[in-house]
Structure formats: C-alpha cells, structure tokens
Image (cartoon, rainbow, N blue to C red; front, side, top):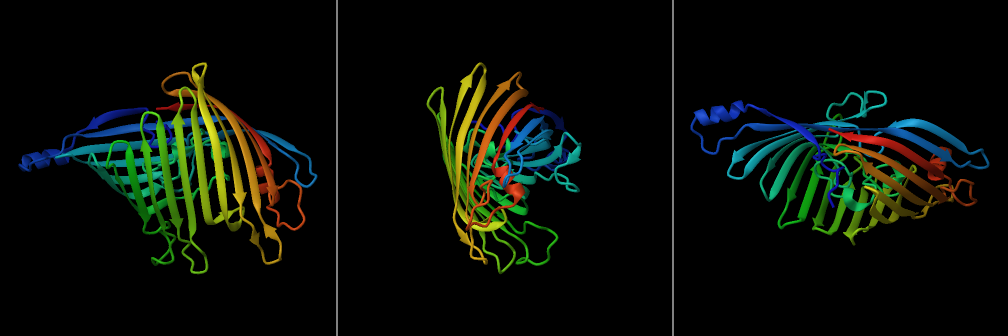
Amino acid sequence: MLSLRSGMKMHSSHFRIPAVTAAVLLASGISGAASAANVELYGSIDNGLRVTAARGIDGASSQTTVGMESGQWFPNLIGLKGSESLGNGYSVAFSLENRFNSDSRTFLEEGRLFDNQALLMVNTEKWTVAAGRMEGLSSTMGEFDLMCPMEPFEGGWAEAGGGNVFANIGLSANNAVAARVRPIAGLTVTGAYSLGVETEKPGFSAKRHYAAIGSSYQNDRLWAGFTYEVLTKGDAASKNDHVFKAGVNYDFGPVRAFIAYSYTKNHTWWGVNSDSNSYMLGFTAPAAGGLIRTSVQYFDGKSVKLADGTDFNADRTVASIGYTYPVSKRTTLWGVYSYSHGSKSLNRNSKSGYTMASTEERAEANRSLVSLGVTHFF
C-alpha cells in the first residue's frame, strides 16, 4: 500500500542545477565524478472546516464550535529534495521540509526553519545513512517513517488517525542519525538514534535521547510493520518512555483490512505516566471514484495508584468514517466523522474512586468531530 503521507514524493516540480563540484572533479581527472544535481520542490496545502460537538462535562451544557483548521489530513508543508550521483551506485541527497499554518501564514514551530526534517543522506540501492533533524519512525511523517500505512486514516484527522489513542513519541529529533537497509525486495529495516533531542541543554546526560528500530514488508497485497521507540527523559528521577507499535493491512480486493496494536510503558497520558494497550480494526474500499475509510479504536489504560489513594485509569473508544475523493492528480476533497467516548478517568461525569482527567481532556475524549476540506499537492 503506497502511503502519500510518508515522504511526500507524490507530486513535485523539479529543475536542474549545474553541479560546480562535478565540473571541478571532472577537470581534475577524478573517476566516478558526480553528474548534475536534481532538486525537487514539493509540498501540500490542506485546509477545511471542523465542527466539534463536545458533550457536557459534570452536568455542564454541551458545546458545539465551528472553525477553520489547517493540516487536518496532511500538514501544510513546503519541501526541497536534492540528489547527486557519485557514480558506482552511490549518491548524496538532502531533504529540507518546513511546516506552516495555511489559515494564519505562521510557522507550525515558530522560530524554527525546516522543522519537519533537515537531512543529509548517502544512498545506495541497498542502504541509506542520514544525519540531521528527523521525525520519529512511527510519526506517520518524514523520510524514515514506517507506520503511516498502519491504519486507514494515515495519521490524519485528529483521533480518526489515532491521536490520543495510539501513542506517538511526539517529537522531531535533533542531532539524529538513521540507517535504512533493504536486504530483499519489499523488506525495509530502519534504526535511528538522537545524540540529544534538545540542542540548548548542556551535557550529554541532561538531554533527552531518542532511539528506535523498526521494519516493514510490502508486496502487491500485503503490508506489515512494527516500530519500537525509546525516549530517555534526561532526568535521573524519570523512567524512560517506551512505545511499541505493530500493524498489518491486506488487500482482499476491493476491500483492504487493517489491524494494529500498540503497547506503551511509562508514557505520559493526560498528565500521568502509565502503561497502556491500544487496538484498531479498520477498512478501506473504493466507492464512486473515491475511497471510503473506516475504523474502530480502543485505548485500554493501566491503573495507576496516585498519592491520594485514588486510581487514574483512562479508557477511550473512537469510531470513525471518512471519504476522500481525488478531483485531479493533485487535489483531493475529503470528509470525516469521528465519535469518541471516554470512560473511567475520562468519563464525562466524575466517578468515585478515580482521579479524573481535566475538564478539557474529558471534553476532548467525549466529543464528535465533522471535518470537511480539501488538500492540494504541488
């Protein structure tokens, strides 16, 4: 299953830049000199309306809001990719991607250029080595993502794509190195490590460090993959954050079925470090020139005994259905509906014996979303 979200390589304008270095190498008589470099300009603009109907918390009135929301399916992104052949099967490449808010023309991360990724890579047919700033292996975005095909909504549209149901380490790692090997057709094995997620903190041990390994396999009908990620907290008193994800999808023709599972240990859920299991069952099917997407997700949080003697134990169920319709090769219309229900510490009415999540967090866990919009790729 080809995922549009990972890599953002689907639509690009490219132009040729004379390679001065190659000319110098050729003039010097060095064998295997590089050819002219190819540079691609690409990106996406995603915008639409979102209607949020939050059920009342602890007897309060329900609230419905309507607003414009950018980046619901794809992030609004401008990217540059370039590559240059070194001969003998080797090449050097770079990738620079910056996310922005199309509804307010601001950077998604203020004050940071190329926030999504900034990578320098060396490639062969069988392997890639990269260094720079990168997204995590299960982020559903970036050069080294493995898990975007894990579920029907490709990580988009809030909880429809697993937000606050399936854990995400939730960072772009600075000072990162990554390696990807392709030992046989369809099989990819990837590892990554950050020498320090933050750049401003002094000392190696004071920084948070990201480490991950994962693999995926794909053929004409089957996709299967997993990731295991660890984030050290940079604090001797804090335990490391562990996130494992695995998923399979299979094309039964015309219906494609999806199954996914995630386990977390010491992950921060609604302000409390706890363990959890998450499950997902979903399907996609073509209809009237577009694609129907649907899934049911269940989050099962493990009970944590707090200092006051109460338990924090959050459960959440999300059901979603959506439709994407490509009006051209570069433009897609979409609509998605999600229904979310929280229980125990996420129940909309306070429960005796439980520490309740905040009012805002319970409102998010007990709401319905309707999203309508358009995404254009360039």
